[in-house]
Image (cartoon, rainbow over all chains, first blue to last red; front, side, top):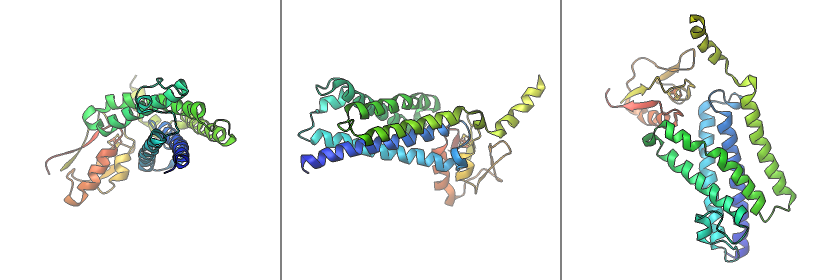
Length: 190
Length: 66
Ligand code: SF4
């Protein structure tokens, strides 16, 4: 592949990974402890959450590998392991390395969650709330496209999607009716 | 194999009953109940394993025995 193609793949896969991660996080927030958005079946949301996450990881791998082998991209394997060590936009590139490591932690603990136990797995899964904003900031900050309207538009849409999920999650409508029913017998005992 | 649900961990979202309707149904609060016995017939073990894998609370297990 020419360096041009690598550069194109590197940027494109980064953007696709971010969009998929946004879907994953929005679904994760939306499906937390209760109803699913749009009354979708739970298993469908669950599988979409998992499959979008795995696909995001594939694109993230393409993003990292293509930029590592691109002779013109100023990134070394060292920068891809140690965050904030890069000579090229150390902070913004470092956010990418940090995000990748957080995702690796989430992936590994999920693969071994049956051995790890629900508590440990969930604790690490919470890192997603750090990982996603880190990835978003990395995209805008390092992105060589951060002067283009479309990268800003995509970033804003991602932000809006997660904000909508949070808003829906905390809205009073979220509380599923059967919960209130389930609690009542205990309330009457007092 | 038998279905085993850890009632203290299960939060009754009913994901397992959606994935394994042949063996499970949801009670009125969404908690899974075995239809009949909790034994898993041979042809459903794969489906049962998949449902076990998807339980968000890791509350759903397959235990040996019939
Ligand atoms: S999927 Fe797990 S937590 Fe949900 S109802 Fe079934 S056993 Fe309970």
